[in-house]
Image: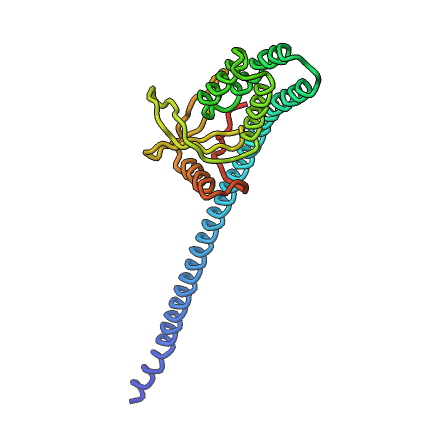
Length: 261
């Protein structure tokens, strides 16, 4: 009995040591696992920060591109406005001349000659402006001038009608609206809807839903289709607003809707 008891006591320290070592290893393993989880969390946070930084950088670049696009559009718009103002100025000068000539004592032959002499400059304002129903407007104007030349209308009547024609042309530069006209697309004559912003911009929409705009290249006007989905949506919204009778307001239009300056 004494011997067995002694052996048992001798074994106890070894068992306690093994138990303590086991607890230490379990604790160390748990601590290592916790450190690994925190390392993974920090790595994920760093990845998230990097992703957010890249997203901010992308948005900043998109914002800079948007500002550059708006600045280009603003510059082109100012150019078109100056051209429209020049056209309006020419018409205003023509009105002033007509007023001066019709108010002053003048014989019919001289008034007729002056009216006919003013026709080329007035005709040029139509050719230089937007291609909005130009053939019809030119035909009406040429018919009026022909009647003045032939004496079918008196010089006084001719002056009054020419005055009304100039006023109609000036009105086009002040108003926005939707109309219909025939244009040439891919070599074919097509009847389309047109949305006109004064005499600054002109958009079209075909019966099949294709949209585009009038573009001036090398002194001549062409009809350029729009393929971008967002651009088509913006132009369709413009048509919708003008059709509803909205004549003023804020319209977002394609960044390249103006001709290149």
